[in-house]
Image (tube, rainbow, N blue to C red; front, side, top):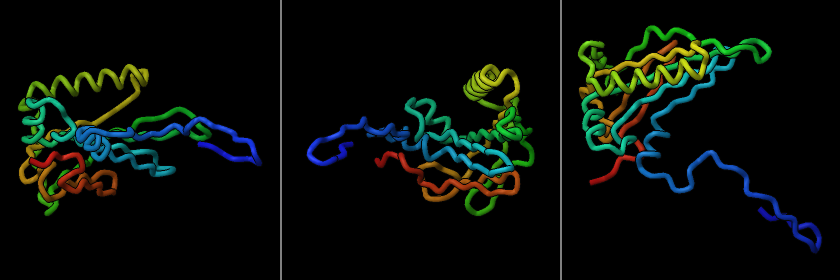
Length: 174
């Protein structure tokens, strides 16, 4: 950025950006698939849909077309910038755009790939939060929900409905 002052020029470095200059379709999908809700005194809720357009691996894309994988975390900042606390995540409902609940996959029926991903993510969260971090992972049969077809995915948590309209940005057109 250049600012002109009289006859001389002052040059400032470009402001840092939180966006990728030329994002790829998977990066666009990953950005869209995360909802970060600052609820003020009620804390911060982050909901992420791990979707097929956000993956670059063909085998993972196939798996994510069959299942809806959701992670939720809810943190609260202590008074005066005090310690962060992590809520237990309970009462989550996941539906399609017509309000039909998706069928949750039990832990023993989970594809091994998801078991590994969840274990790794949980371990990383525990390490980075000194064992205090809590995240809820849920896996559902996709049913009528498809990241790249018209529709909607709705996650209901803590009195709020969070929705992802589909097709999501980043879906590659055939």
